[in-house]
Image 1: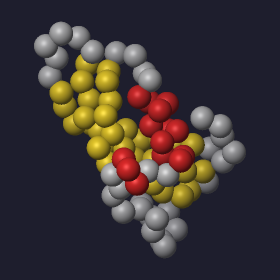
Image 2: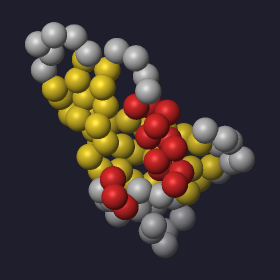
Image 3: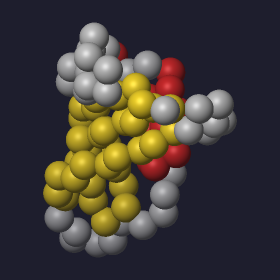
Length: 81
């Protein structure tokens, strides 16, 4: 985590994800149509939490090519994922 208010944390690998980061990742990983694999992420304390995931994504269809994407997730204060 960063000491700067509103600043992003250092880049983390999946084995370093906090419980909140793992829950947010589970939420987007279960979306149909595209397979996401989180490779790294950052978190930011705001009025709630922002999570930024850097992912390998692939459309779930034959012969589809993988690509890199960034997924931003906002979790409101007191929200349950």
